[in-house]
Length: 313
Image 1: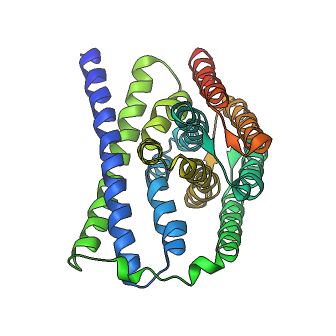
Image 2: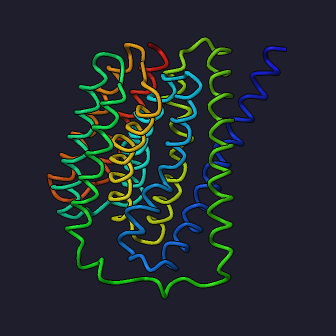
């Protein structure tokens, strides 16, 4: 009976992951269309709709876990998603094709990600994240977005309202349906993953930082692989770094504002591992403003090693 229940939960986790990926895609497409019809520029659409859309699974899962008193899955999902983004996805894409990166990515976004990760490590050192600390993270995200808008002011002058096409009602419908799908899939993923953790005898932190995190990173994975296949591999690095910053400051911050979070002691160790991975990835960028296949392989190995340590720990 227990084995059958575990098998059912495993299937539900897989279905929820697919649901998150499909729903996030529909939400981004629909909300992006609505934003363009309202006359917002491509830059603003990218900074708001696309940034939130690709991180919507992380936010929905993190918030659902926080509201159901599963703080370890909540925080573990954010930390694990960033490890998955920077290690498995970024490194994996670099294995397919070397990634060129811009100077802005290295100097502005890379350093911002190091700062955000370091701050998260400090805030989690007491094994809790208060509402005030959540406010601090969200305020910092606002400052980061303001810098992006200012540095991209020329792009702000280029309205993309004319890009919208099709029936006016289709985009809002896709956005609402996508958001509903994200919320439902997130709840199924959290509850099923927690049940699997109990069956396997591992902590909710381990499940959150590995399986759940990999599931919520599905949109970033699909976007990055598609970009690499189109010969736009350079876009992958920027998207993944930006999404990781949004996860730490926006997703984690908003979840803490809704409900203070507490975690197990191993959370600090894993966050420290993430900090090291972030510094290494940025150093790779800085060395020659590109991520080689060898460096990508190193990031994949480091992330895989973290999974092994988490499961064995």
